[in-house]
Image (cartoon, rainbow, N blue to C red; front, top):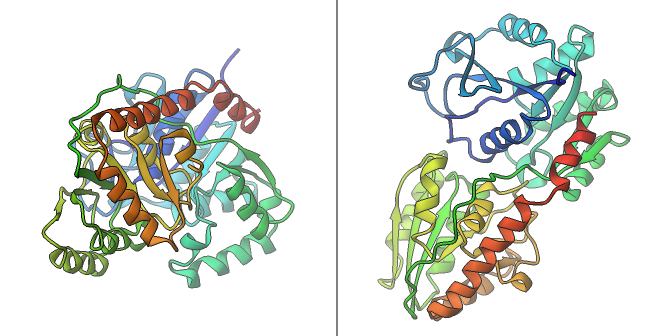
Length: 380
């Protein structure tokens, strides 16, 4: 029997990496479900925030360069037109069109309009990917709330299926779009986990790593201000693209004022395939985010076998009881500092115990047989 066809629409896809989690979510989706469905991806040929297209990518035609079972159409961003996207969507003969995020003009709003007017016959599945959380809506709310009201007024939410990646996202969808059909299915994680590898841990010294876009929602400034109160010797590596120069300047000013026991290095953005060995050279991953729908960098750290220190605004909760890390309310910066101080005192044996627990936790997550079964319900 021929596989059902899913057309994934997303602004950025591999080999891009500067848009962070949404790219990784869609890559994992494509590779995890390619044995169950015929996966097609419609995206652009240019990474987030870049003007030059990807090297070695052929635009405006279908390619299977990533994998024989995953077709990708990289539309040339510099000359992309709505009529071209419409033709690709209709020609794909997709049973389902899978939309990611909520406010993309080309890859969400336009296909929703085509479906609303009857031009696009495919069934629509929409994954907001955290776009309805208050932390996300607080950015440019003057654009987002009018669209939400129009979306609801036209009754579009009653014509589609929503994919919520956790119960918190389901509640957010129902808050803005009551009566919607929602299927809850965890984000499909990266599944190629390396074997467990430790690193040297000296009592009194802690190597930390922060991996995220440099924007206020990721809360790097909060972390730096917290480190200013820490007495232990700490080394922090920052990885991620700078998207907000004003915010980054505030971070740099704070870095310059840190005490001599705190050493901070900015390593710039890195591709996803470069992160694992870097993570394995550190003891602790830190991300005091104001809100994550999944947090792929958090899970990447767990895959690497590293404890994580994060806020309680992600799906990763109850970490301390599992000896995999800590999820702390942002109203308690002292608890963040105290956790860093305590972990800095760890010896090798204590670090290895928690590091191995983090690795095992990630292993159990990716081996969960229920992950794919929920997607069968999403695309029946």
